[in-house]
Length: 138
Image (cartoon, rainbow, N blue to C red; front, side, top):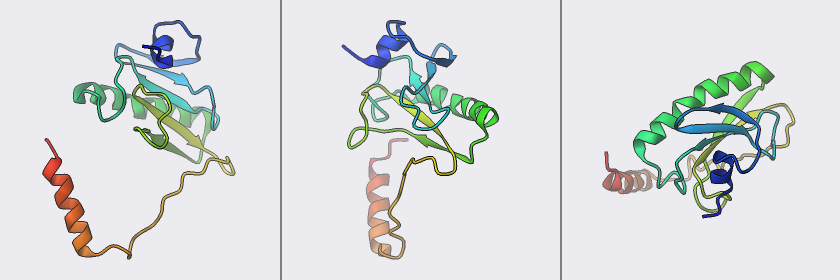
């Protein structure tokens, strides 16, 4: 398998390592969408959020506040986006990872959501809720 993140984890590609333990490696994203943009990458190869083991996911997500707070203290952003791309349209590296994107005034990053509040009927909400719960395996 030719996975860029597996190659980084194996030391085949140099990187700017922020943090590492038995489950994750955190590196500066090469794109630096904003200053401090960091990736938290599962050391074990899982394609994306749909595939990752729940216990490992818990271990990985426990690192998010620690690394996010280090970014906050280092650069004093006005906020931070935590982003996981899973399949289309945005996942480009098919190895589970979390983006921590510090936000600054006029940083050029555009993450926008459509607000459909008021356009959805109670029946549609209930149907959506029912379908999700039907497939929830907890």
